[in-house]
Image (cartoon, rainbow, N blue to C red; front, top):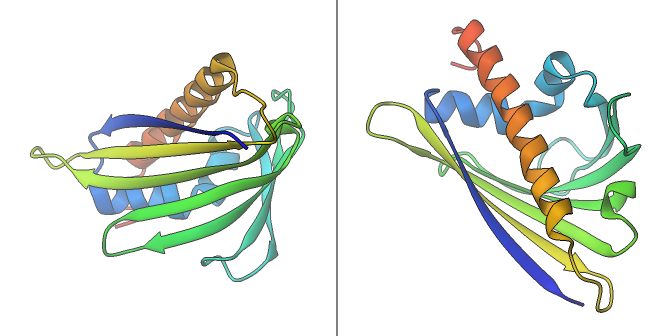
Length: 160
């Protein structure tokens, strides 16, 4: 098994608490509203939404993938950190065992936020993670982030 780790940061003018609640904790509800072409719906298969919960994300018509299952690994409200792992689905391309993501929201001096994200790909056997696949995933995540950020700007009372 190979292990490949990538880090990524996204800056926002949204406060850390609102961003944590809206983008990380409630993405299952917001993303299908703001990007139905990307994510059709999210359903909980096991659990109560906390660590250990298994969710199935069904992608929208605009995606080349059908679905992914992910497991919530950690939710740390005090440190505004959220971790989950993609554990099943065609997005893993048959050569990745899982992809673990950990995102932490940190404040900026101007009242905004930075999301610091780490993604770790665990490959099957000696498979190699294609840089283009990683780049495409980062770009899609950034695009969904911008849509959620726009929603939070348009709805200033949401997630206070």
